Image (cartoon, rainbow, N blue to C red; front, side, top):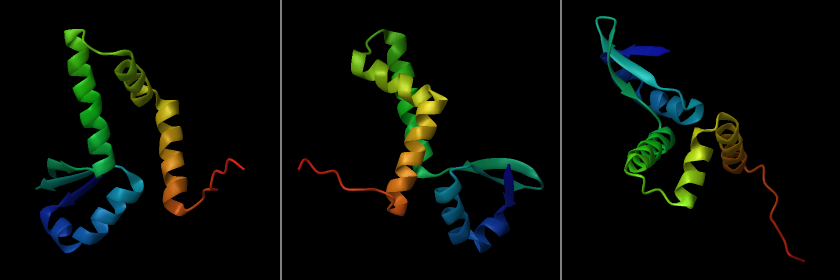
Length: 101
């Protein structure tokens, strides 16, 4: 767990953002050694928002089979890690173009 005080965050903001994007681990911001806020990368935020949205919809019983499949993938650790690894490969250019030749 990374805990920064507000001065460290202010002085190293660009570096903190870069680390958030690369590591996808939350950064806690605190005062007097106590966490007061959490920063997270946008990918993780969007992932969590989608999971929460689907779980709320599930309570109503109105999930279609595509949404159930999406939720299963999002909540499966192995599938999620494979997705992250694939996205990292794309980001780093470790891909081969697909051809139908």
